[in-house]
Amino acid sequence: MIVYIDTEFTDLHDDNGPIRLISAAFVAENGQEFYFELTDSYQEIDCSEFVLENVLPYLDHSKFGLTTVEAALKLKAWCESLGERIQFASDAPLYDYELIKVMLVNQNVTIENLDKKAQYFTAVLIEHKVEKYFQENLNANRHHALCDARAFASVFAKVSL
Image 1 (spheres, rainbow, N blue to C red):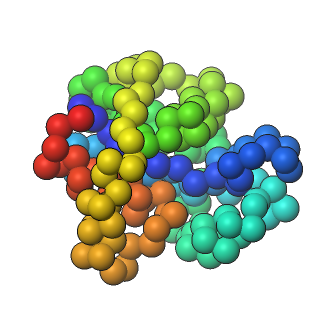
Image 2: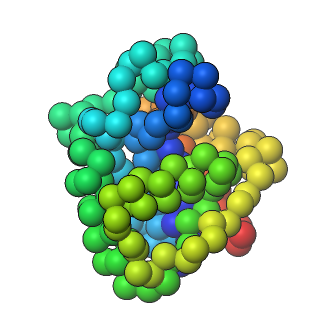
């Protein structure tokens, strides 16, 4: 089963130190979702201007906030509850998948049913379909990991990777 993932992180570059995970979303082909916002992995000073303006204002730690340990364990439980082998798919696996892998390794958590390689899809090829998703879902915010992952899943629900 494919699980579409998207993350938000502090910066595209490591000018202010290592790139840090802020939030992550996972939308399975069967429609199940998992989303978290980390409460202990970054500070505002770590974030680019873009992130300060376009990501942080849309977070809701009271509803989705987890520590890194909690997020890793809950992600493992959610993935394994899907009951079959899964593969993450991302438009930016060098960020999305790598940040998730680092989080899991640092917390010594292994997802037993997760394929070791993520699928890559080119966002440019699906951009018009993603744009249509956001036009049809006016409450969805671009650069919110859950909204972006839902957009990707909706596009690929109609097209096989």
